[in-house]
Length: 419
Ligand SMILES: [Zn+2]
Image (cartoon, rainbow, N blue to C red; front, side, top):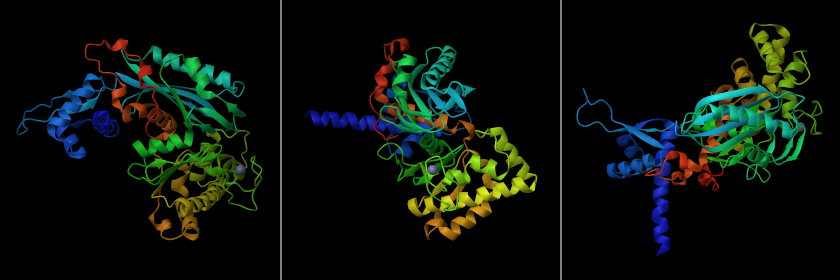
């Protein structure tokens, strides 16, 4: 009857996962709130919370009973100092590493420019390792690093962190996950994913995409990338290249893109296009130049204003295509689109109304991202936490075991969710 025993264990893992995920996504809750939300009895919640506590994942506080009728239900919260992950971001112009506690709190972050003279993979990995070691040296005593998540600005295979292609870095066929695993020298697993996919994960979990199970996140920097969530699940594609929406054709009279096609969305609506229309091309687009154009447009400077409106037009044209294909409930605009959107919302909506099909166009809400510049890092942290959230029993019980003896390699089994 081994299958019956396995089934009982699997049901218990699922319930432990539900409690841990509820606390991770929504913060501290009383035992009675957890019971109501997850349809579990008081005794079951007490038993499962005790189990998570023995693993060092949660702790309980009894609220002050004064002024409250009856006995107050203990409040369960994450032991955010005991378990953390490293989140890293490899962008074209910057490198960042953060230590993020369970619950998504960023404990510390280090960001440096991605020096144009140090763009090679080995140099990038070396710089990330230095940043990671600096943060780990300052990590809370006894804190276990359970995983490493990396947001990468290119096409990457999530199963092993193999980079197929990154145009702006000039990378092709780089085993980034393996290189970083070796360089960090940690037992904790390293997982790499595309920055827009992780932006979608972060905004869906904690930002403007919460509650929308059909959503698209758009990352807009030099290029435009999309993270697509369909029916609550990420759309990855065979090679991890789903969501490369920057290369959908929007303008048959447009400019030639580096990919060889004419009028790709990112050549018409990306940062480079904004600077081109404003007559302020500056080589690789820099955030300061883009911010300057947006500020000048907000002040009414005519050329900057016209450039912003042109971007708004092409943004709307591309969004209408996405609305027709995916029928999303929500589209979350990240990167410079989130700064630009308020001033071009009417133009964007006009294009979506004119080009998208009913009823999809009336059902979609288009909103700016809310997590700011650290969206990709927060998504990378979620990626690294997923194995523990899916199965908290990967963290061994600490009953009678000193915390320092726990080996983080224990959580290296593959994630059960496709993030
Ligand atoms: Zn293209």
